[in-house]
Image: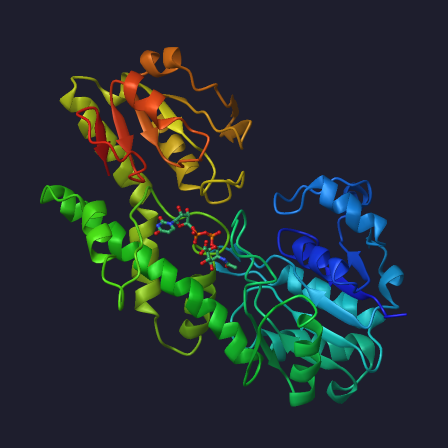
Length: 419
Ligand code: SAJ
């Protein structure tokens, strides 16, 4: 009988990993500090879009159990830590990682393996996790394997999942790397070993900093291209015809989610501790952070051209989630734009079939049904998150004015304007 693996933290990273492992025949016991989360999962309620309730039911039938009682995971021999690493006051917050490491240390036994997946700054595995595991278990570093492997879950991605996304692994020792590779080869088609946990930690930060900086580049260009009367989306599509040496990124109303706006700050914080400033990240953050404001000012200009004051306008914001196809509103630029519009006195309505309701300060807004009547009622429509279920034809045929921040509308029209 294969000893179970324990996935610590059953969120958008841990649950898909647990699902892949169970489906591959690896018994899994999930550990989550939130007893209600454990109860919901054992009751077949996933709460994660990438794992349906039906799929969860199948996993439970195959023996998956989730617990918030530490002793229940003592028999595991591999512990994979998949807990959040947010920012607090602009600085890395490793509270969850430290808590998970202390918990695992209590049940860690000689010969076990611990793998950290949470995105974090280089050195965390060796300088934060390892000491906590040793202190809490009474073991030495030689008694167990420790590795880092960055999560590469892309919520809502229909093409790439755990199986076909290469997995990067860095072990504290060659034997730790070997054990981690064998573990992930159960569920990943390709596992890539790097020199140590530091290179693996840095690989993830490079991936997301690369996106962050390149999105900022086109965001900054969007502002001056507008002044030059140049359609930057057109320019990017033209540049993207070059089959080598270019990768398209597109401007937008801002950068949301819990990866791109957050991960690069983990790196810039660590670099600052060395006495350097990571200027690319700081500049990119500054540019991306001002895009919601730019979006509102662009709308104000368009309304003004139509003789309407923003402060007395009714604005329909299409899409609230931070990207299409998901319900996650964390750091969503669309929500930021709605906040700013309301602060300017505009009346804000929003349809988003993925987000039934939204708290904006003290008010709860409910998602509206996107109808021709609603489109005709408002002074402007801002297309922020183009979910596939938004009928753009209906929007462009009934709306007086559309600010399309994502160039989702391809047909040129006098009433449709781009960022
Ligand atoms: N965005 C732009 N312009 C772009 C691309 C994105 O404004 O050209 C905005 C999006 O609208 C969104 C934010 O940036 O608000 C983040 O979008 P994202 O496509 O990067 O999606 P995320 O945040 O889900 O990022 C995840 C990351 N995956 C992991 O960290 C494991 C990232 O590494 C992936 O590259 C990304 O998915 C992906 O490729 O979809």
